[in-house]
Length: 115
Image 1 (cartoon, rainbow, N blue to C red):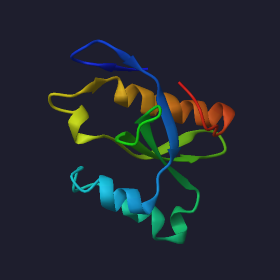
Image 2 (image 1 turned 180 degrees about the horizontal axis):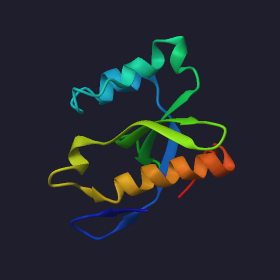
Image 3 (image 1 turned 90 degrees about the vertical axis):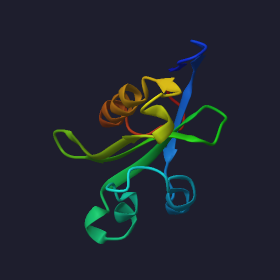
Image 4 (image 1 turned 135 degrees about the horizontal axis):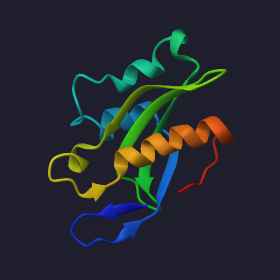
């Protein structure tokens, strides 16, 4: 669960596949040196899965991860917390949840609900 830094309240998270339109509409203020759209352009990225993390039953993206499940390990191509979860962050433990999700993917495969 993510922890709200002001209130200390805990919020369950939800992971689902990130869509190209969401990158263009909701992630335009994110790190400009990270090109999330590249994972939707080329065939050489066909094994890479891109997920967003939200608070359960909400739509604002709290973080995102691009990962590839390989035969003997998982490779994280790109991982990022939303700008509002960096300096003066609203929620704590975003990065930890993204990494945990990658590990969980490797061991169990994708499911709609977690954490």
